[in-house]
Length: 298
Ligand code: SF4
Image 1 (tube, rainbow, N blue to C red):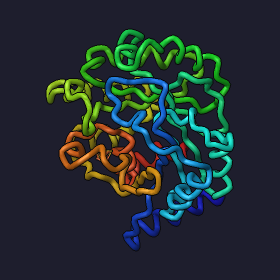
Image 2 (image 1 turned 90 degrees about the vertical axis):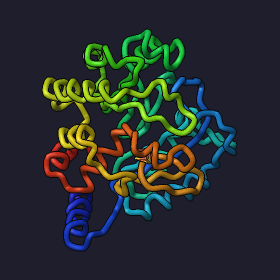
Image 3 (image 1 turned 135 degrees about the horizontal axis):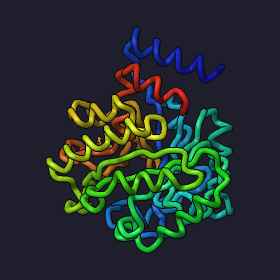
């Protein structure tokens, strides 16, 4: 009831008063990671580890923005531990105490996938050889962890790049067939500052990818997390960015949209394929079909 009232009030404030209250927010819990992925520019940068009080400080800033869905990411967030031995479960407790409605963890899937978070988003980028070419020889570990997880809200983040563009629909079908996978969200590779431009899709590849994504969405309308409105905005390149419907905090520094400061500029935003950003944009513009598709996750 509290949630329904919140989102109704959000819609009214948006329509009548033009208020801009972010729908979701992201906290960068750590830069530490146990992998060295080819496309990643944000791991093991030597950040000073956050303590739990610093995490609480950042969460309070996010809560004050009005957002009630928090995404915990890194680095690999499941590796985070402070000097007192607090881990990500203590962070989830804090999130709930502060009054957020939903907690989401994005993970590389190499650690056991048990958590009290509402959703676990696990990265899998294609067939075993494609995933391993991007992230190291970990595909089997990730799939074993998915299979042995008892988490009821386990989803897959799948990034389409030049590495897997030709085969992505077939490999995504095989991912949806894995036990415990509830659904999938496709991203298009974004060339963040310092990233590998050779992974970018060419214009033709991008157009072909989007055609095939629409077909995939028609085959799996519920299990494909990308909304039709979001795919249309991507295909027509009509979404305005950075979006205000999402905010990110990295050790006290708050930015609009889904990126931490330092990894993007106007050119990166222009080439952006970050579909969580696109999806929050279609929500901020109150696209009815996107609102309906997202109701179950709020
Ligand atoms: S549009 Fe948002 S998610 Fe995309 S690159 Fe820019 S800041 Fe990052």
